[in-house]
Length: 437
Image 1 (tube, rainbow, N blue to C red):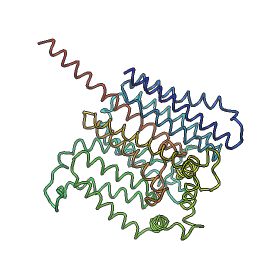
Image 2: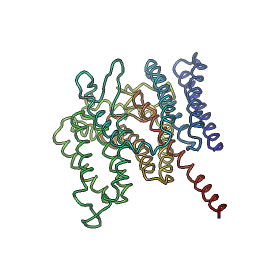
Image 3: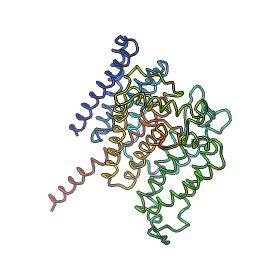
Image 4: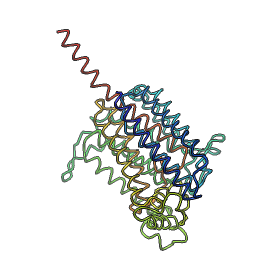
């Protein structure tokens, strides 16, 4: 649809204007001069987003027009903030953005029909298992900042978990399409809840165990929570039974309580969450500094390029939301939150409009990944939840995260494109039937 693509192009132009304006303001705030590389910067931003737009226009012309511009806006805002923190990291982020757009385009080229992914469900399951154990392989896995979530193959360092989340979303969607009728079976009633037969709890128990293994072995609370929440959400959507949410909540509570009692790093996270000031110079330093930064930001912020009075370790990754809140204030932080709400709303609309079960579940899973991941890290920074080490999609620094999220975005657009084509084809077939009679 030309109207959709024209709308997308207009929103991309708006995102480019906002990003370029933010970059100029950040430079003025830092050096009181216009950036000397403003023309190359503008060319790169326009070139990357225009390339992504042309790919969608050619390969998925009926896709949702909102997702790509909002992702570009978040990506651009994140780049501007990272540039103010570390110019070298900003250069690397620009390079990874290029590869992310390339991966976005390649996904649209290779995945011409989302339903083809359903055939390779067990291949994706095997790939997910391989990616999960990759950080434990000697000579490949690496431990950084207390978490063993990195892998190195030659000169390339990446986080397998970022790819794993998409692979598992595809596998879960395909598996649940086959098993949803069995999982809907309820033979027990406890109060107002109808619980399924125990023999069908196997998949949930397996995922519960995997999430615990990830948390224990890799010390990665964020990925553990993300994987388990993804499966429970898809299970609930596939079966339409609230009882699965109850089962999932009980299993999560039991696993969290066991982890709290058994592992010191989990206790540390909870202690910091409850009272970071008790050990402010030590374990609570990051969270405490983030709280001060957001407080200094106030309503309108200190201004782009004028923050940094509060030093936050790893601000470009886990705590980039705190930096945004400092420099752009509550209003800027709200813009980020609203952007994610718009993306999640668009993704759920795609899922609701999908007529095929696999496409519906896949779109739901991919959208849930974006929403849950954004919620986990923002809630951790603002002390709504204990802090866990996940990135803010499209905003935080990180090559693995950008690549994975652009692939995720392309898959959502592919489902959207197929969904919008279906009503037209159905109407055409009905017209042909009427003409024949």
